[in-house]
Image (cartoon, rainbow, N blue to C red; front, side, top):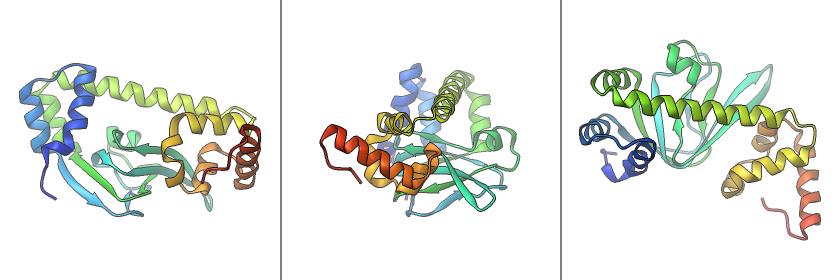
Amino acid sequence: MQNNPTLLDSLIQLLNGIQPISKELEIALVKRFKIEDVKKGKILLYEKDICKTLWFLCDGLLRSYHNIGDKEITSRIMYAGHIVISPGSFFTQTPATESIETLAECTLAKLSFNDLQEIYRKFPEFNYHSRLITEQYFFKQEERLYMLRKHDSTAKYNFFLQHYADHLKDIPQKYIASFLNIAPETLSRTRSKLAKKNNTREIY
């Protein structure tokens, strides 16, 4: 797909929401980002590969996961408006400790690591936006780690509903259970209990 500035409107709005960007920076970003349509089930990054691309998720749904033995652990779920990287790998250009997979058909705007560095050099103002986005990423990770320390599966699932309710039907149950670090059977019982408590049907 050719570049479509309209698809990047949400990215520009995100950046302007942090601090208004110059017209020159906006033009440079629109020029450098490349739009790509990706099918469901595509692995954007494999564990142990180096993350050389930053993606902006225009539309769709992604997850990141890592392997412990023969078990996959879902660590992040990302929807439209998210900036997607494997942080440790991207910032240090070393092998990733996670994989990134599409959970639905996605439209992505991608930017190479080298192009990003060039934009940093030409537009020092962009370093400020990058710092705040990175800070927000680590805040979200801290939120999830705090959630994982909870022993109550209901509290964990309520956390999921608070942050991902709009995407509940699009995320396989095994990935939700993995994300919350509970067994699929525990997730099923928790959902049934909440449905009975609220006198509603379970949402799948």
